[in-house]
Image (tube, rainbow, N blue to C red; front, side, top):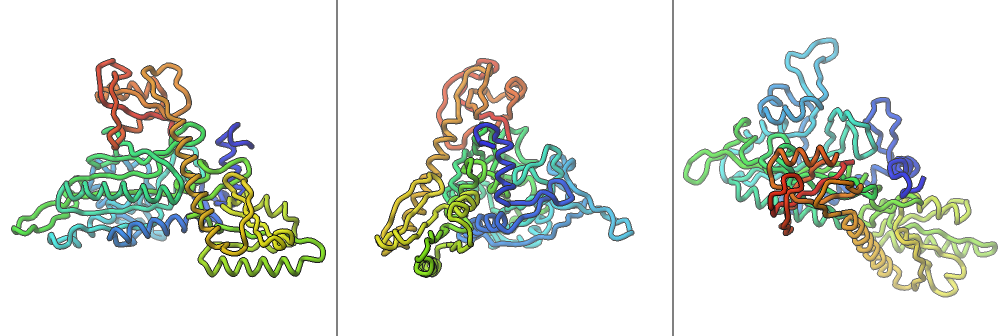
Amino acid sequence: MKKAEDFSEWYNEIVEKANLTDKRYPVKGMNVWTPYGWKIMQAIDGHIRQEFDATNHNEVCFPLLIPEEQFKKEKEHIKGFDSEVFWVTYAGLNPLDVKLLLRPTSETAMYPMFALWVRSHADLPLKTYQIVNTFRYETKQTRAFIRVREIHFFESHTCHSDFEDAERQVKEDYEIMERLSRKLCIPYRLLKRTDWDKFPGAFYTVGIDTSLPSGRSLQLGSIHQYMENFSRPYEIKYEDEKGEHKYVHQTTYGMSERLVGAVVAIHGDDKGLVLPPDIATNQVVIIPVLAKGTTEMVSKAAKELFEELKSAGIRVHLDERDVRPGAKYFDWELKGVPLRLELGIKDMEKGKVTFVRRDTGEKSQKDRTGIVGEIREMLALISKDMFERAKKEMDDNLVTVDSLDQLPEKMIRTGWCGVEDCGHEIENRSGMDILGTPVDGETYSGACVICGKPTKTQIYIARAM
């Protein structure tokens, strides 16, 4: 299946052929992470941990089960999630006195403890994160990494003395996402959700949205400013320098295994995966090109090259299987390894190694001496080029319109007066979702696409994946 012909079928086929996950587990939407897929996810988790550890967040791990009475404390929250939760009502053969649920997200699990941890202004800011599984009964058609019922989930939760400090945390989250996006080579837009689409209980929500080759949007994550909307029902208060007790202001930041799905969808091609170097399980694969009478010599040189790269900290694999080089090329292209090194007797006689880029297929020869530096430069160039190509494709998939007639299957930018009725009419007439307004101060001057009133507010709409 070709990506340009049927993106949906191509995506499913690539995920299966590259063996990223196994969907045959007997609970629909709860898939098994295979070794190759899990290593990619772990690499992404590693970059997330690095970013949040560096910004003074502390990793925690909260229990999976949440008591019903804690879940009910924040009414807006349960209104948003009550149709999606999995309930636990029995322990063995005994009905439970208190119903429990599997966390759909962790506000109602963590905040009773935050009320115990936060006592004084000296305890603030409290900055925590965890990487855990969450559970939501996804009623739409499931799709590997994108719509699942057991979700590999990252969430940060912070408490602050006031609104301004919480806003600084939101800005820091934007900066973290910018750095992470470069590792994943995934461009995105920060779009403030409408009031009717914000996270349940949030003061406001900012979605992290990218465009897929199909023209649909994919939400990679979200950042929420809660103000005191959770600290009041959960009694999370601190004593300030004057001895006054005040409610904390809170933020959260969430992302999931959708990051893997986005990497597959945005970078993959008709040959298979194309992995960014920073998250590739193997950044480099070495293929010895053997010929009669040179096998021992080439094999020895390939092993020496492997050891040199490994000791330099490059994630490298030496493919010594007894199959033809062409079969090896096919396998590693499917797996998306960023850089293939071919080494044969002719290369050795010239003192060269053949480089083949996975993203472009471009071949070149580099000197065997100084090979580590050449590889590092090439991996950095691959990462840069992958991001820029994806950014250009995302920008090309954006169309500005002043009418909702005959909309293309792309992300759409148009004018909105800000009135909710006009917003709902935009969604009804377009058949798309309002993603929100850009947070980066894009200028706009036009008219509301529904009522025609002059406006400086632009919105993005798209069909969501």
